[in-house]
Amino acid sequence: MQDALRRALADAVAAAVADGSLPEVSLPDFDVSAPPRSEMGDFACNVAMALAGPAKKAPREIAQIIISHLPAGPPLDRAEVAGPGFINLFLSARWLHDALRDCLTRRGEYGGSNSGAGERVQIEFVSANPVGPLHIGNARGGPYGDVLANLLQLTGHQVEREYYVNDASANTQLQTFGRSLRLRYLELLGEEVELSDEMYRGEYVIGYSRALVEEHDDSLRDVPDTAEGWVRFADLVVPTVLDSLRRDLECFGIHFDVWFSERSLHESGAVREEIDRLLAMGAAYEKDGAIWLRTGEHGDEEDRVLVRRDGAPTYIASDAAYVRDKFARGFDRAIYVLGPDHAGYVARMKAAVEAIGIDLHRVEIVVSQIVRLVRGGEPVRLSKRKGQVVSLRELLEEVGKDAARFHFLTRAIESHMDFDLDLAKKQANENPVYYVQYAHTRTCGVLRRAESEGAVVPAPSEAALDQLTHPDELALLRKIADFPGEIELSATTRAPHRLTHFARELAALFHQFYTTCRVVDPEQPALTGARLCLVQAAQIVLATTCRLLGIAAPETM
Image (tube, rainbow, N blue to C red):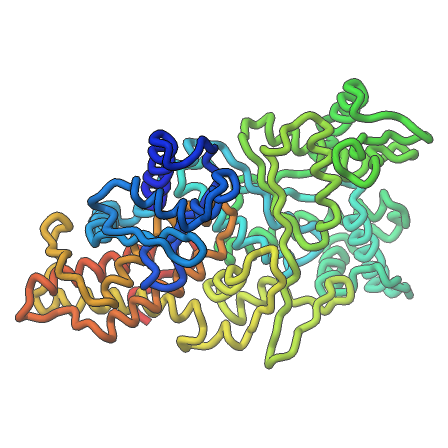
């Protein structure tokens, strides 16, 4: 409906220009969106204000001209000028009835579209270093990437989920992890060791080291205290870490299509080939014994080292080879979901992408912000290296998958958030995931009771939907009709958190409808049939929203 209204408004502007009511102007971008209050119409538009400058007319005058050129009749009932020049659009009820019938006909496919036109998109998310259990800071990007993939798939994109395993031998964190393992291993063999501040100190490190003692006895005692030796220790444990990460993510409802090894880029020669290619094309140069990438020419603060003086490639070299590999695999678009510790890396990464000759519009980088666990109103402090870690597994054991996913998605990923553990565990309406799931349960209960009383949901084409005139019925109808637009907006703006807000609003409207409107009334069979259609549509949209969010839509609670 928003697209149809946008086209109608654009046509009205064109008609006004054609008959001289408006001067020759280019149509600017404008919004058609739901106003804050129902008395302001079904939709509001700011096109008149956007045209005020180019047309050199007052916005309210322009708005009246546009309204006079809008076509009469359904779906538009009337249009009004409001405030400084908004156009408030009031639609006939027919569009709501059409949306309801569409929902009941398409069922689980309602809200979907082919706007993506088969575009191949790769989303790389989580990608925590394989140096221990997944903690909540890394985990926040999990539901985001997973739900964004669901949204893109529903809008016609071909999507692949990928986890990038940072297992290159030059990886500083991998070496630190291996060094920590070595020290704990020697400690378990009876040697006195000293762990510096940068070492990983969690109990999980001791657990991994104990497993090394059990499997290898003291045969690793002579592994040298060098970078090569640290990597050897890490390599013995990384497969176990990755298996644990996979299990934890699967318990979180996240399944990756590809687990991509950074080390494979080095072993295949892809990193070296990329460095040579960049040198040959002039995007990189040698200076002071190192090789530099010309990122300063592409918006970065300065050029960045691609290969150090000792011949070791930097992270940027791996990233350059990796992004080229992505597009060599046939993806049209690559979306990176990075953790908060990568915020300072975005500018140089974008510069590197542009420097190697890839259209920057094909690469999107999303950076999650810090999540803070709160219990009893007090923050729970986290530090993987100091061992004070709340792992994803512990979070799932405490609050469950559904609550964890939903609460992570209640805020935009670019915003800091507090995760209230006490609220996430409550079986009460103030807990948003419980509130939404209870609404779905209630729709199921209404339909079961109706069936037991002999009332059936009529076919969409036969339902007397014009019987739905109560304000609470119309509000619920409107929300159901908004669902396709919400899906499209959530996908295009990369904003999965919008779904949690939509789900809560839909649940609230259904609960209100349930309170004020008697669904089954034997004396009013036409109204009963229409209301059962409305209940079933609410059930469908709630279930689809839960499916997209990766949470259960229970039939009983």
